[in-house]
Image (cartoon, rainbow, N blue to C red; front, side):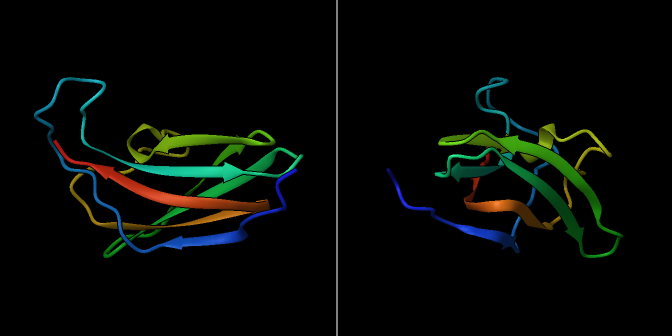
Length: 109
């Protein structure tokens, strides 16, 4: 058994989804991703809030990561409460009810 790994709160101060992509969709569409690892025996419930330079935050986006699993979420696929705008720098805060590990990744094409 893997020991419990991670934290309840993660802050990622960097994010940007380009307005356009040049790669074939959906594989090479430009995106920002949140990769989450849950090494516990419980499902993790996450709330993700997105912050901007000149406008109010949006969120929380709510999602889950099953026990002993990993999931990758593309910020440009978040829809509820509203889509994350393209062409604007953003930051995010991830809050989980149990400890998880988070990583932010980007694909520009």
